[in-house]
Image 1 (tube, one colour):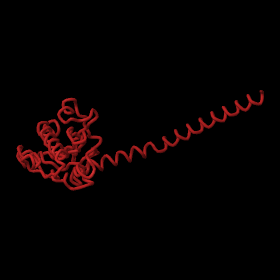
Image 2 (tube, helix red, strand yellow):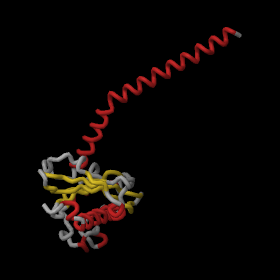
Image 3 (tube, one colour):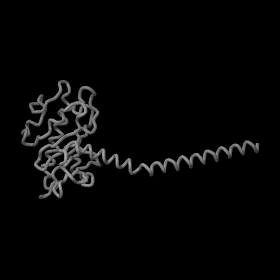
Image 4 (cartoon, helix red, strand yellow):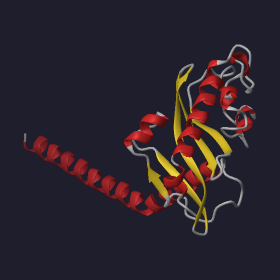
Length: 209
Protein backbone atom coordinates (compact mmCIF):
# COMPACT_ATOMS: atom_id res chain seq x y z
CA UNK A 1 0.00 0.00 0.00
CA UNK A 2 2.81 2.36 0.96
CA UNK A 3 4.57 1.66 -2.35
CA UNK A 4 1.40 2.43 -4.34
CA UNK A 5 1.01 5.73 -2.54
CA UNK A 6 4.65 6.59 -3.16
CA UNK A 7 4.25 5.77 -6.87
CA UNK A 8 1.12 7.90 -7.03
CA UNK A 9 2.81 10.86 -5.39
CA UNK A 10 5.86 10.45 -7.63
CA UNK A 11 3.62 10.45 -10.72
CA UNK A 12 1.72 13.52 -9.59
CA UNK A 13 4.94 15.40 -8.87
CA UNK A 14 6.32 14.42 -12.28
CA UNK A 15 3.21 15.71 -14.05
CA UNK A 16 3.34 18.92 -12.04
CA UNK A 17 6.98 19.50 -12.95
CA UNK A 18 6.23 18.84 -16.64
CA UNK A 19 3.34 21.28 -16.49
CA UNK A 20 5.53 23.98 -14.95
CA UNK A 21 8.32 23.43 -17.47
CA UNK A 22 5.91 23.36 -20.45
CA UNK A 23 4.17 26.52 -19.28
CA UNK A 24 7.50 28.28 -18.79
CA UNK A 25 8.61 27.24 -22.29
CA UNK A 26 5.37 28.50 -23.83
CA UNK A 27 5.61 31.80 -21.95
CA UNK A 28 9.24 32.20 -22.96
CA UNK A 29 8.49 31.46 -26.61
CA UNK A 30 5.63 33.96 -26.62
CA UNK A 31 7.82 36.64 -25.02
CA UNK A 32 10.62 36.04 -27.52
CA UNK A 33 8.38 36.01 -30.62
CA UNK A 34 5.65 38.49 -29.67
CA UNK A 35 7.34 41.51 -31.26
CA UNK A 36 8.25 39.52 -34.37
CA UNK A 37 4.67 38.31 -34.82
CA UNK A 38 3.27 41.81 -34.29
CA UNK A 39 5.82 43.21 -36.73
CA UNK A 40 4.90 40.62 -39.36
CA UNK A 41 1.18 41.31 -38.89
CA UNK A 42 1.78 45.04 -39.25
CA UNK A 43 3.90 44.56 -42.38
CA UNK A 44 1.23 42.34 -43.93
CA UNK A 45 -1.46 44.92 -43.19
CA UNK A 46 0.59 47.76 -44.67
CA UNK A 47 1.35 45.66 -47.75
CA UNK A 48 -2.35 44.96 -48.26
CA UNK A 49 -3.27 48.63 -47.88
CA UNK A 50 -0.46 49.62 -50.25
CA UNK A 51 -2.11 47.51 -52.99
CA UNK A 52 -4.87 50.13 -53.32
CA UNK A 53 -2.50 53.10 -53.37
CA UNK A 54 0.05 54.15 -56.00
CA UNK A 55 3.60 53.07 -55.17
CA UNK A 56 5.47 55.73 -53.20
CA UNK A 57 2.38 57.89 -52.82
CA UNK A 58 2.56 58.15 -49.02
CA UNK A 59 5.32 58.52 -46.45
CA UNK A 60 3.50 58.23 -43.13
CA UNK A 61 2.93 55.28 -40.81
CA UNK A 62 -0.47 54.57 -42.27
CA UNK A 63 -1.53 52.28 -39.44
CA UNK A 64 -0.79 55.00 -36.90
CA UNK A 65 -2.96 57.40 -38.90
CA UNK A 66 -5.95 55.06 -38.93
CA UNK A 67 -9.28 56.46 -37.79
CA UNK A 68 -11.91 54.13 -36.30
CA UNK A 69 -15.21 54.33 -38.16
CA UNK A 70 -17.99 55.75 -36.03
CA UNK A 71 -21.43 54.15 -35.84
CA UNK A 72 -22.81 56.27 -38.69
CA UNK A 73 -19.90 55.33 -40.97
CA UNK A 74 -20.22 51.65 -40.09
CA UNK A 75 -23.91 51.78 -40.96
CA UNK A 76 -23.35 53.47 -44.31
CA UNK A 77 -20.39 51.27 -45.24
CA UNK A 78 -21.92 48.05 -43.86
CA UNK A 79 -18.67 47.71 -41.94
CA UNK A 80 -17.60 45.64 -38.98
CA UNK A 81 -17.47 47.26 -35.54
CA UNK A 82 -13.66 47.53 -35.64
CA UNK A 83 -13.49 48.93 -39.19
CA UNK A 84 -10.92 51.63 -39.92
CA UNK A 85 -10.21 54.42 -42.35
CA UNK A 86 -6.51 54.78 -43.12
CA UNK A 87 -5.09 58.18 -44.07
CA UNK A 88 -2.26 58.17 -46.63
CA UNK A 89 -0.13 61.29 -46.23
CA UNK A 90 2.70 63.06 -47.98
CA UNK A 91 4.20 65.31 -45.37
CA UNK A 92 1.26 66.89 -43.56
CA UNK A 93 -1.15 66.54 -46.49
CA UNK A 94 -3.67 63.71 -46.62
CA UNK A 95 -3.53 62.63 -50.24
CA UNK A 96 -5.85 59.61 -50.04
CA UNK A 97 -7.86 57.42 -47.71
CA UNK A 98 -8.27 53.67 -47.64
CA UNK A 99 -11.68 52.58 -46.43
CA UNK A 100 -12.62 49.19 -45.01
CA UNK A 101 -16.08 48.41 -46.33
CA UNK A 102 -18.36 45.46 -46.97
CA UNK A 103 -20.59 44.45 -49.84
CA UNK A 104 -23.29 42.67 -47.83
CA UNK A 105 -25.07 41.13 -50.80
CA UNK A 106 -22.58 38.77 -52.38
CA UNK A 107 -23.83 35.44 -53.71
CA UNK A 108 -22.53 33.65 -50.60
CA UNK A 109 -22.65 36.48 -48.11
CA UNK A 110 -20.42 39.39 -47.22
CA UNK A 111 -17.54 40.51 -49.42
CA UNK A 112 -14.97 42.50 -47.47
CA UNK A 113 -13.20 45.23 -49.41
CA UNK A 114 -10.47 47.82 -49.16
CA UNK A 115 -11.12 50.89 -51.30
CA UNK A 116 -8.46 53.52 -51.88
CA UNK A 117 -9.82 56.96 -52.78
CA UNK A 118 -7.78 60.03 -53.70
CA UNK A 119 -8.51 63.50 -52.40
CA UNK A 120 -10.15 64.39 -55.72
CA UNK A 121 -12.61 61.50 -55.36
CA UNK A 122 -10.90 59.15 -57.80
CA UNK A 123 -10.64 55.44 -57.05
CA UNK A 124 -6.98 54.48 -56.67
CA UNK A 125 -7.55 50.80 -56.14
CA UNK A 126 -9.92 48.16 -54.80
CA UNK A 127 -9.09 44.79 -53.32
CA UNK A 128 -11.28 41.99 -52.03
CA UNK A 129 -9.99 41.11 -48.56
CA UNK A 130 -12.32 38.20 -47.82
CA UNK A 131 -15.25 36.49 -49.53
CA UNK A 132 -17.08 33.19 -49.83
CA UNK A 133 -18.10 33.45 -53.48
CA UNK A 134 -18.30 30.31 -55.58
CA UNK A 135 -14.81 29.04 -56.51
CA UNK A 136 -14.21 29.14 -60.24
CA UNK A 137 -17.34 31.18 -60.95
CA UNK A 138 -17.85 34.17 -58.67
CA UNK A 139 -14.37 34.43 -57.23
CA UNK A 140 -12.94 36.34 -60.21
CA UNK A 141 -13.54 39.49 -58.16
CA UNK A 142 -10.38 38.47 -56.27
CA UNK A 143 -7.21 39.92 -57.81
CA UNK A 144 -5.53 36.57 -57.22
CA UNK A 145 -7.93 35.07 -59.81
CA UNK A 146 -8.32 37.87 -62.37
CA UNK A 147 -7.73 41.56 -63.05
CA UNK A 148 -11.46 42.35 -62.97
CA UNK A 149 -11.18 44.34 -59.72
CA UNK A 150 -8.67 46.71 -61.38
CA UNK A 151 -11.45 48.05 -63.61
CA UNK A 152 -12.30 50.46 -60.79
CA UNK A 153 -8.92 52.20 -60.97
CA UNK A 154 -9.39 55.83 -61.99
CA UNK A 155 -13.18 55.77 -61.70
CA UNK A 156 -15.11 58.46 -59.83
CA UNK A 157 -18.69 59.50 -59.22
CA UNK A 158 -18.62 61.48 -62.48
CA UNK A 159 -16.71 58.99 -64.60
CA UNK A 160 -18.80 57.05 -65.17
CA UNK A 161 -21.98 58.93 -64.34
CA UNK A 162 -23.97 57.71 -61.35
CA UNK A 163 -26.47 55.78 -63.48
CA UNK A 164 -23.60 53.86 -65.09
CA UNK A 165 -22.32 52.44 -61.79
CA UNK A 166 -23.84 49.05 -62.55
CA UNK A 167 -22.80 45.88 -64.34
CA UNK A 168 -23.54 45.83 -68.07
CA UNK A 169 -26.38 43.39 -67.56
CA UNK A 170 -28.15 46.13 -65.59
CA UNK A 171 -27.35 48.82 -68.16
CA UNK A 172 -24.12 50.00 -66.55
CA UNK A 173 -20.46 50.14 -67.49
CA UNK A 174 -18.87 47.27 -65.62
CA UNK A 175 -18.16 43.88 -67.15
CA UNK A 176 -19.20 40.67 -65.51
CA UNK A 177 -18.82 36.98 -66.16
CA UNK A 178 -21.89 35.28 -67.59
CA UNK A 179 -23.63 33.24 -64.95
CA UNK A 180 -21.91 35.10 -62.11
CA UNK A 181 -23.53 38.52 -61.96
CA UNK A 182 -24.32 38.77 -58.27
CA UNK A 183 -20.72 39.04 -57.05
CA UNK A 184 -19.62 41.92 -59.35
CA UNK A 185 -22.97 43.64 -58.90
CA UNK A 186 -22.41 43.65 -55.11
CA UNK A 187 -18.83 44.93 -55.46
CA UNK A 188 -19.79 47.72 -57.91
CA UNK A 189 -22.53 48.85 -55.53
CA UNK A 190 -20.17 48.80 -52.54
CA UNK A 191 -17.42 50.76 -54.30
CA UNK A 192 -19.89 53.46 -55.39
CA UNK A 193 -21.28 53.52 -51.86
CA UNK A 194 -17.75 54.10 -50.57
CA UNK A 195 -17.20 56.95 -53.03
CA UNK A 196 -20.47 58.54 -51.91
CA UNK A 197 -19.25 58.31 -48.31
CA UNK A 198 -15.79 59.75 -49.00
CA UNK A 199 -17.13 62.67 -51.04
CA UNK A 200 -19.72 63.46 -48.37
CA UNK A 201 -17.02 63.34 -45.66
CA UNK A 202 -14.40 65.21 -47.72
CA UNK A 203 -13.68 67.89 -45.12
CA UNK A 204 -13.45 65.55 -42.13
CA UNK A 205 -11.30 63.02 -43.98
CA UNK A 206 -8.94 65.35 -45.82
CA UNK A 207 -9.24 68.63 -43.93
CA UNK A 208 -8.84 72.00 -45.58
CA UNK A 209 -5.30 71.43 -46.88
